[in-house]
Image (cartoon, rainbow, N blue to C red; front, top):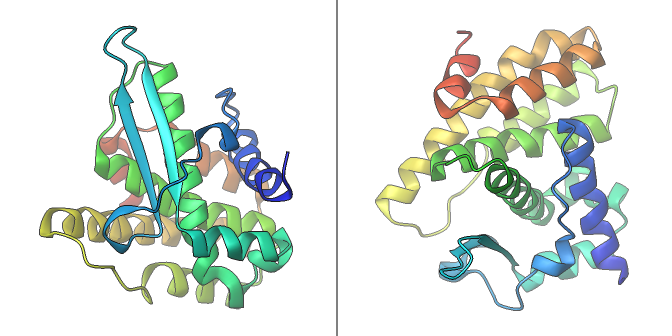
Length: 210
């Protein structure tokens, strides 16, 4: 296994451990040797095998993001100054984990659900890696993830999906703030797991305090 694949599996395994799932996925087996379309930095590919009816998953990560991760330790890659090219990797791994688990459970999911979960997962990974975070650093991280970002050139439908997912994740991040400030790790993890397990309607309710 290459050092890069080991880092990807480590991050992916962190998601599995957090959400107490076993997808059976090794990231390297699903990494596609193609660039994501339309200038994106990551892209999930899904295809149903017509013969077996099984879902085939592929993850495409831009060369610059893979090179970035390969050059940095995980500690350095998750530091503030390196997050720009690390976040697409975290989003891609979230997509892969969520889609794989949904396929295993034979549960349909929407593109909005996939994106909303990824927005929350990148926060989760960053916070848990820095635990216990200071009050000011959490505010700065939330601002970085959900308020200071730029969308690449996408169509109107995808733009609506991304901005909706971003808004819901930002609201959920605010609801997590009391657990962060009180450094209640167990409650923080349980809240993240509840969000992961929820349907899209449930994610909306959790984001808005329902």
